[in-house]
Length: 81
Image (cartoon, rainbow, N blue to C red; front, side, top):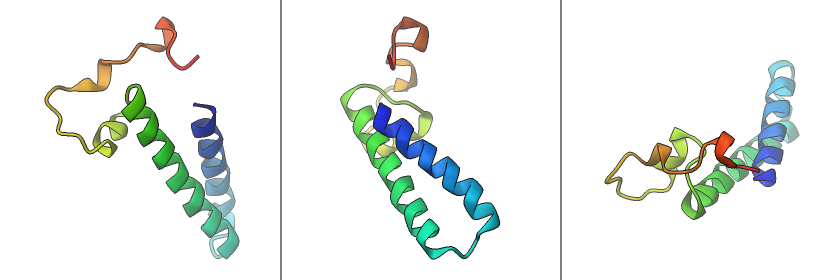
């Protein structure tokens, strides 16, 4: 979970930077790298535990027989701690 948060932080920070530096090739490369890393980590987490967002349900690529968005514990039930 911490790795997902770290990748998300980098993506958010680079988004702000790229708003004012649209042609910075190194920042664009890093943005793509960390955005892909975040997607991969969220997919792995969803496959092992439960989806963190509605997008994770689609990323898993499994045939959906039920709507599993609510299958995992809620934050107040100890999720993601």
